[in-house]
Image (cartoon, rainbow over all chains, first blue to last red; front, side, top):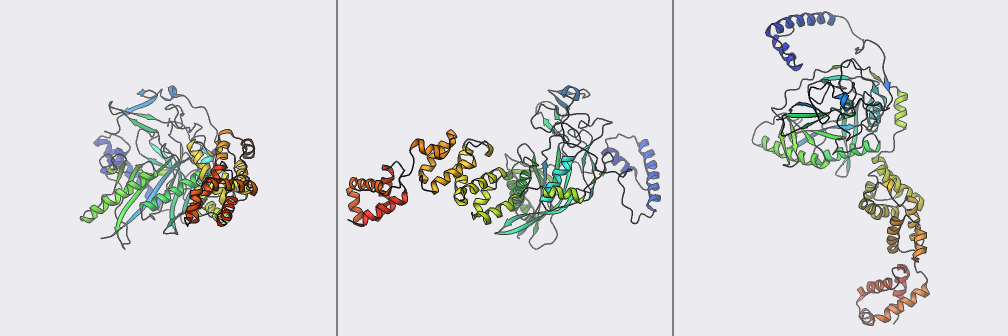
Length: 95
Length: 477
């Protein structure tokens, strides 16, 4: 076993996912298969190969520091379930 | 037992770009909440970030100014956590391949230089701001600050006292401001500092357990919080307990640190490479271009002022507090050719008037050339130093040239020996009593006669000539 049900529960909690015990069981076995596949990849000789972070070998895609018009407060808050005085309203953070 | 303090600092500096790090929204402070936002910095699905080139250039300036090695390739990472002021649910930052590593800043310790190592400098985006309403059950979020560019400067645990930490902070602060990449405003949060602090028995190699201090929004508070923390940790160690590794908040009004325990869960950020942004590749040519455009830094300027102008290190420190002041001083010194006198005037009357009027250097009604001219006419004996102060005040009020003021007001110094001799004789004649006392050995009355003569001429007499005349007159009965 590469990963336990507890670890799946912990990762789910970090991602704020609510999982039933059944779902945790299913995901544990699926994640195990994925991690076992990684083990196969670990067998490949990568000596002298640069680690790759991106699929394309490009770099330095920049924009100039030029201001663009923002979308406005009303539009910014259009999807917010709660808003007040131009702020996003959220459940109280600190008690 | 004696304990040694070990301090390392993490500084976040907001960069002075016009726009945010990954979108064209303005970075202006104090705007209507959420007015500087767009789908990218709001973290809307389907949007893609594009890196602001200025951010890389500004970060490179700081890296090179602090002797860091700028990496040929650096990459972006996602730091995952949930908080309402972080719209995407992750912060785009740099993790395992930061922009720059292994630099240093020099501070002073017992008259010698002490080198404080910089572990790394990396770029990242700022979070938004949350406001907590005491009464209602809500918090409010303003995302104007979300994705404003930051650099994080992480020091080595090289500092051994709150004073060293404060010095290091001031050095970083002045470099950032000199480089014109950060406004350095601690109150508004454009320059923020977190501190790691631990104690260990003197002579011990390994570090003690540290606490991380946050929420110190001035140099003074950083120093106070560190001093408090030393006392707190020492008390724990002395009664044989263990310090808890935790984050503590500085409470400015109570002057204590409070544990954040219970309000914070164990952090597990699950960093991974940011798939939406390509690596930053920095050529030697680009690095050189940035290095060549760096201004003279405060430390270098200070040392040069001492050696080139022969002014005391204290003067050099005051005059290099900002680039604008240093430039002003240099212009005055160059034009009048008397660097020490220029330093006295700039540090004295000029700064006093400027601070009184709450003006910036550039807004001063007295340009460097006018101050240099004033020093010139003091030096050539046209006016006395005392009158010069009046002239300066008039220059400040009216913006007129010193020579013009001196002529208009008839302030030209009396150096004519004949004219002054007559006045001196009158002064002596009018003060027979004092004259007698002087002649019977009360030498300190000499100053009295000088004062009376100056008064009689409205301060316009050349003090040197007055002194000579008085000496002559008083020695011959």
